[in-house]
Image (cartoon, rainbow, N blue to C red; front, side):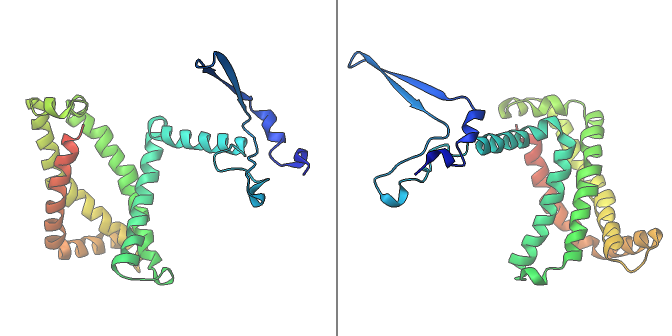
Amino acid sequence: MNTSRIPCAPTSMLLRRRVFYTADRSKGRHRDNRRSDCSLAYHDSPSHQFFPSASSSYYPLASVMVSSVRNKLHSLPICRPFLAQLAVSTVKTTAADILVQTVAEKKSLKDIDWRRTAIFAGFGFAYLGCFQWYLLINKYSKWFPTMKHFAALPLREKLRCKQGLIEGVKMVVFDVVVHSPMIYFPSYYTLKEFVGGPSWNPSEWVKDGLRKYYKNAPQDLSAMVMVTIPSDCVQVMMP
């Protein structure tokens, strides 16, 4: 077999050859363990004689590209936090609705209500991604100024920080009394009418959305209280 025609050979010039020297003190000499990033593995089995092993770096350029993409994704929340917020919120709400329809409601992929999924995707992008960034990052930092310092404390010190605990309680109360019932749910029902309603009049979206919210408010608010209070307390106390 002519190894010069192996597709991996030209790419090996793009990376430096790594040479490992291992000292063998028991024999008083050194072993030169030279390994190319584009080496081929030759096995005893004839069927695997000219195929790369799983441990060999047969495609070093592809490995570098994958590593670069992975590093960029890891650094995205730090370098571009707002974009990361938009991406996570949109994907999360879209995937959650698809999961509910396929698992809880036992629908096949062809029977999925994509209009309903679009409502959740739009709500995740516009409200959870954009508005909550403005509210939780910009406004909360002004309304509750000690929370940034409080969040960086370990759990034992948080339990001793009286001012931080007081502001944490204020955040939970604001979320349960103001944010969720007066902003979150009205925005969701209005957006639902915008996507799935029959009218193209924005005032009708608001009227129909608030009418449906008023009808479902007892059930929605009771579920919100049971979920939001424990989850907010956990988030406030997390290191």
